[in-house]
Each structure stands twice: as structure tokens, then as C-alpha cells.
Length: 165
Length: 375
Picture 1: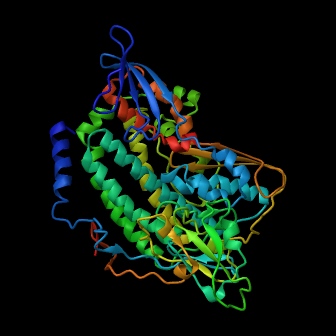
Picture 2: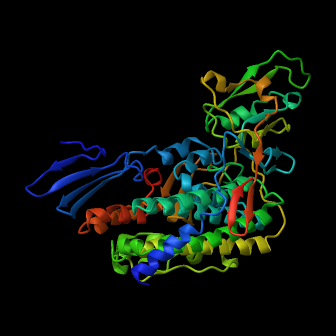
Picture 3: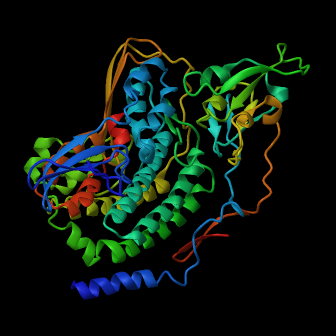
């Protein structure tokens, strides 16, 4: 192929893209639809696929066994067991995990360690904060399911175009 | 020592020789420094200086049990996370003496091949921007996101999935995965044709890469390079073919071999491999059996005392782990053999005698990833 035809073919390939919809996801205005929560089934020993974002703690199921904290020990030491003023028969010591998101690496091995279906990971990834202190999520804060107000978009494929809508 | 606006410092050593320091914060070079001595426009000496991001991953695995090492090891090679965990899991499983169910093996292969495309696309984007082609930087990095979406559907994260673990994989694929994956790969294959038109057949690309940085067959074997660099030097070598792990013997794929041995050949190997990876995933999605995906292990799983060695074909070449265990819950010693470091040795061979302008093209065609090499 000569230089002239090669150059024109390259230009034509670029020009072909002009009328196509743009693929960019406009993040702060919209956000990608997430695959759901990542949870683990200790009976089957297999996790359910989902997004490994911020944790969710089902307080009434947590027994304060510290296995999540132990699982995290050599990974990032993000989980600390803290006392919560809460009377719960299955949790005599009233200790619950508190996650420091300045340290967490979102590997999800704490979820895999929980034998009581008490810990999961939500599809919330909007964890920005102004101070490091705000990134420490107390058990009560972890128990609240995340709320996303911005509109969610999906990837769509049409012939040879992919775009977010 | 005058420092230019670009941050590259130069030093006059002899009458007409100049030492140019590149890195360690070079955009694209990663945390890696090399010093070249130039005489006019020709490079006469190269001094690679790796080690800026050494974090002792091998030593650190000695203090963690077999599961806890995974998030740490993944961070050595962020574009290729599945394949760096692969040999580690395989070696640990050999020591634990467990059999992995076939469905888990296939899921590992899907993730591994998807990761290979992701890594190659990242490489392609940087290679293009090194050659001054910004469109080809934008396109692969945009399309890479769609493949990362697929990884996210399975692995639950965008980059660090921690998906392969000793004992199988973390979770099964979601129900709508096959449909979405086929759609994505159909789209992506059409894009690859566009890539060829605008970049791989572009006369500018051909002029910049053909005949540049030739690594002959005998030299490639003598230096012991691996992966795409070796295949571009006319050696048919692929761990997936030579010593099949997982269930690679059940799928059909071709291994690209190019006789040109230059930078162009190294680029074409990457393009060829992306198509082959899609081909492998399509075959797996057709014939994946149902069943369990994970063998349940105790949190503090003990291994037999002894040694295990496992090797997989990562996107940059053969990635191997050698684990020695004394029968405890943690490895006694781990040795990681990474492809990046093995390919670095030829940098000196290829750069000496070439033009300064060819330096980025040759350097990045080796797909050197400093963090992986330094471990």
C-alpha cells in the first residue's frame, strides 16, 4: 500500500467516527448501573457476584465474632471491632466491625469470612470525603444501605457503536 | 547539569557525547530510570536502572497466609491482575493437594483472557502516544472500559478483582454475562478493524516501527526473553500451548509468530493475541459446564511440606511462582519470576545503535511494567 492510500484510509477510518454517538460516561451527572451487592453464602462456600464497594452490615445478624477483622489483619487492617450501645441477644459483647475506608482495599475477603450472613458489599463507590475521619464508617453508618440520587445509565451497543444511555 | 523544561537532565561527558537521564518519573516509563549516552542522534550506551518500586512482595508473602497474599500480589501488576495471581494459586493448590472443578477452571480462563485483552489495550494506547498518535491512545483506553465492565460483572471490581484464589474462583458468573460478553466482543472485533485502518496499516506507524529494534531469533533465545517479544522473534513459545494449565488443551487457538523480529512484529503480536483471546472466550462460553466453582478451604489452610512451581502465560509472557512450604499456613519462601524483568535485559541490546527518536517505540514494544519487574 502506498503512503497516499494508507494515509487516506487512516483518515477515512477516523472520519467514520464523526457521526457516531460518543461513548463517554458523564460521571458526576450520571453514573453507571452497578451489578448489585456482593454477598457470600457460607453454607455453599461460594459468593454471589456483585460489586465490591462500600460494606453493608446487617446489625441484627452480627455476633461480634471478629472473623472479618481477623481476615483483614494482614491485608489492610481496615476493620476494627468497636462497642456499640445496642442490646442484642446474639451479640453479648455488643461489638461490631468499623471499617476505615482510607485503608480498605475492597478485596472482599472479610465478606467471605463472615459465617452469619451479616456482612456484604454494596455497589456504592462514591466514598469521597474531605477528612480522613469521615472515611471511618461506624457500624451504624455501615448498616444504612447506600442511596444514589443521580440517574443511572447503561452501556448500549448498536451495530458498531457503544454508548452510555 | 542543565535541567530542561521537560525534566530531562543532560550531561556532557566527552566532546560529542551527551548523557541523557530518562525517568524515574517519565510519563509512560513508569517508575523506572534509564540513562542513555547519545552521540549526535545515535544512542551509544544504555544503563537501565530498575528497582524504584521494589516493595518486597516475595518477602511479604512469608508473613501472610495463602489467601491474604492475593490483594498484595495483585498490586504488582495492575493491568494484569488475574495472570499474576494465576501461578500463585496453581502452586498453592499443588501444595494443598486439591482438585479444582472444571467450571472454575473455565471461569479462570475467561478472566485470564479478558485480562490479556485489557492489558494489551493499555499497552496499545501507550505505544500509540509514544509514536505521537493521540487518536489511537483514546480509542483503546475507551474500549478497554467495556472489557473492564465485563471483569466487573464477574470480579466485582474494576481493576483488582482478587478473583483467582487457591481453591477455585470467588464466585460464579452472573446469568446475563454471556449475552453481554458476546455483544461486547462483537463490538470490539469491529473496533479492531478500525484500529488496523487507523494505526496498524498507517504508513507513519510502519515507517516508525519496521526494521527498528531488531532482535534476532538466536539472540532472543540466548537472552531468554518471554512472551510477545519472543514470539515476535520467530520462536513459537506459549505456556498455554507448551505446558497447558487450566483447560487450555480443550480450546483451539493460534500462537502468532513473526519472522520480522522488529518493533512492528512485536506490535502485531499484541493485535493478533487480542483476536485469539476473544476466540478462546467464545469457545468457553459455548461449552462451559455447570457445577461448583470453589473448593471450600479452611481460613488457615495448611499445606504439605515441599515445593511447587507453576507457570502461566501472562499478557507479557511466562509468569511463574515457586513456593517452598514447611507445612504451615504460610509459605516459607516465594520466588516470583516476572516476564517484565526478563524482557528488560534486551533493552540494552536493542537501544544501542538506534536513533533517539526510536527509543520510546522500542522501549514500550517490550511492554515493560516497572512495578511488576521490581515486585
